[in-house]
Image (cartoon, rainbow, N blue to C red; front, side, top):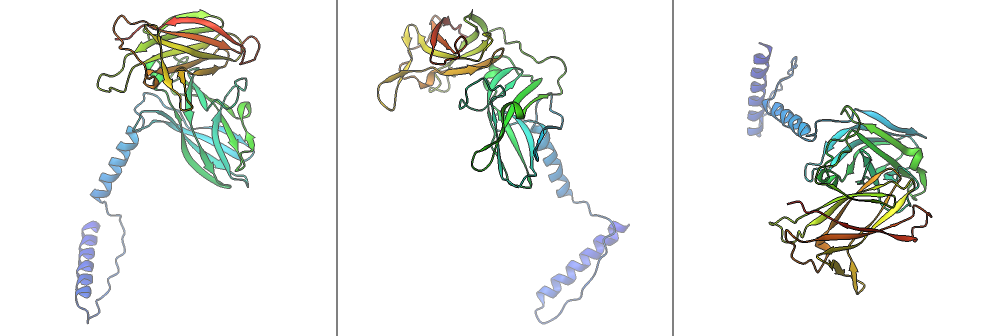
Length: 337
């Protein structure tokens, strides 16, 4: 009954107001309405339902991260709020709240969780013990709180067969506006357990064959053909390289070849260079590597009987000198059709 009376009063008020606006020479009356019950808007209810649905769609995983404090030191507090997936690319994201109670503006990134690996090789974290690249840059003014995400680029890890994440390990790198380090490395290291029960899933898919086990490395891999609908996609090799040397080490895909043709590209500074990257890894850990053929200028036609190989070089584990390069061996990547 209250709602009906209230609606009638509001309608009357609207009518009087409309008359007042329409008659320039007359002054309209004023009706004061005391709202004793909130009106329910069907439009507002629809918007709330849509917002809730969108929020639910942000995390299409079967697991999550419970809210927890990851770092609380020197007036800086970082809290994990949960997991989500990027709506455009499907990247895994850790939602964070960063509180800065200090008098200095700060920036937050990630760094190596184990300081044996040389600095300056990029930001990364470990998902179930596998190294993946990360992206995070949070600027937090003094005496303020900012919410943002840490993105994990895990496409290659999923392609290798690891999709359910039990454990995330990362280390924050916190600096002032002049990039002077405040907290980093072991000081800002944290391990996060997800709601999945049991030990972290580390078992690669059956098509990730063990290609080599020597020189302090285990190499698993496969060749993945390009998408026929994308002419620029020339395929790639996917490798998981586990460092068993006991020390931090570097591995280099020195020569990638198809049927004996070493894949190269024209360098911007002149001359030709081989495709193939260098990766650093901590002892007992594994790095996921994706070597795309799209960069090469001379990819021959690849058939079901093509032989795809890579010469691998290693450095660092015996002497700690990353210029002390040794040939690890040649591996052949089986094709996945």
